[in-house]
Image (cartoon, rainbow, N blue to C red):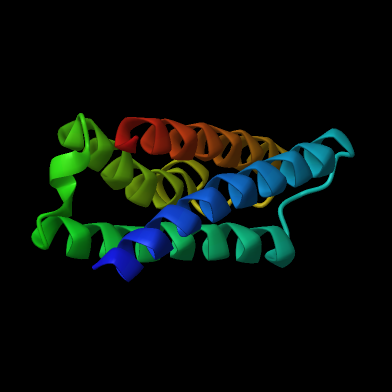
Length: 126
């Protein structure tokens, strides 16, 4: 379980860095007037996969009793669940397949928001 805990910890740093990078990349694309393309959606999908792996590892740690050291495990869990559902919700419910420049703005702010969620999730785990 210690190995899973260290992977979960390292992957959390990967998550916030990744979402910061694709958020800034999305802003750059939006400012230039570009629409959403497959490269950006692929990067967002990879970010979502990072959150899915984080959720699986976090669930294993929780089932193994390793959530005892977290000061506010409920808030940490809430951030994790929110991170899992927010990007698919925005893409499927708000954008509904839109790939215009407006969608690029929405997705870039969404990924930057998920960057903040990842940081807050880390802060609740310490």
